[in-house]
Length: 278
Figure 1: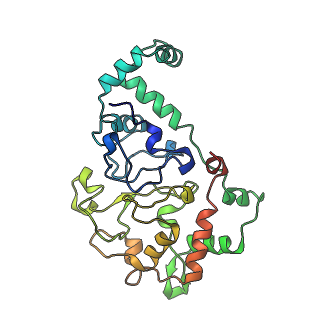
Figure 2: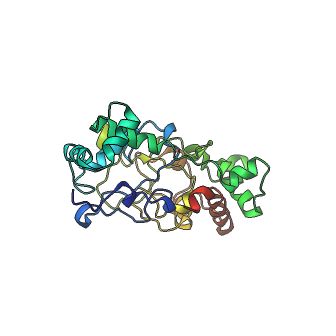
Figure 3: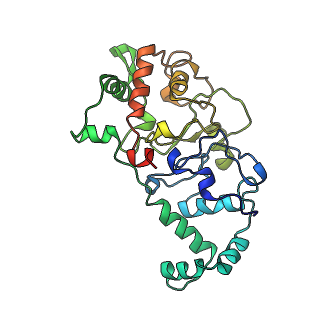
């Protein structure tokens, strides 16, 4: 509304299209409610925001414009501004034929741009193609990442793959990961209105995770080491705690210091140089 906030204010390329703050700064220096989510590989998601309230990327892209804590504007005013600008009418005509500038075409344009933001060329990807070699620590971290925590069979992995498996390093579902309660944010339950969804939040991709600190929906953890330490000894039990965490001993996985460091090393191998060098 006052020409001070753009999409890139909260989605900076060098931060994996997040912004490095616990909560983003919007219009008139208002703080947003949650940490800014990174933007890449979005074609494979079908619910957006930490609470999944938006069903499409084009719908999601328009919400910050009218959010009073973010851009504080109206879509009608944005359409009028673009129509009155020097270059946007011609650009919209090139893109959409009719030259129509509307909330719909603005959403389509923002969606089309964000769908170009793909990430698939990390050191880990190169290693899987035989073009690079993971360090011993990174290999150990990958082993832990993909291994079940099942003491009865002598397996003491980190169980990460249940929520962060596959090529996208996310199942794009919603989970309560045992964060100690610090506020009244109920996550998915605010959208679904189901008690069983309380404290469940979208599972972010772990690609480029070394670039997108701080971590969690509220940015409470400053480093990857803090994140891993949470799953090792800081998990808080509740009725909606994810079953793959609830099965662990009280507090979490109880990983050794060396294993925690190995997991961090592996997570750092998921950085795409195309993002790191932006």
